[in-house]
Image 1 (spheres, rainbow, N blue to C red):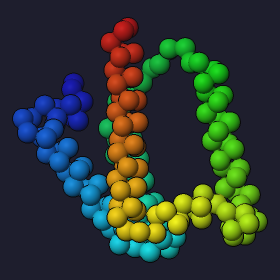
Image 2: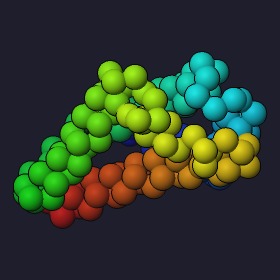
Image 3: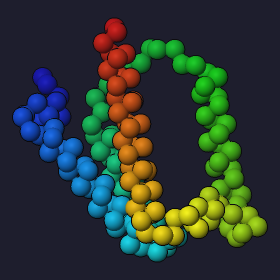
Image 4: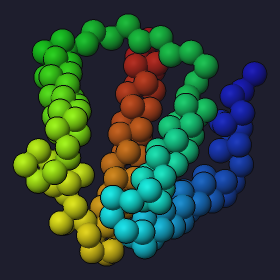
Length: 149
């Protein structure tokens, strides 16, 4: 039995409609985010909401089972784990120390750059585009590994 997503995307025009809908949603998100004040609850809720929607969309669009037997470069994984752990440690420590200009979080450092609405809109679009590209790369890697079996 065919996967429902594959059947839906096989209908002529649906793929283009899906892509244009995603583009419109990204532009609406960026516009909405740029109209909120930086480091406020509405801006935070918009980012969290977009992350939840994108994460749920990605999760639902994945095949039921993915069996990956390809070897993983442990050195590459170790580098990314160290970078992510260092960033998370910096954020937690800075937040615990008061999130002031002596101990700034990443948000505090980025705020002067992102305080102008057009820059915030471009940053939001970049964030969504980057996430979409990472998702596409992951899907392509899964297809390549599946085809090589």
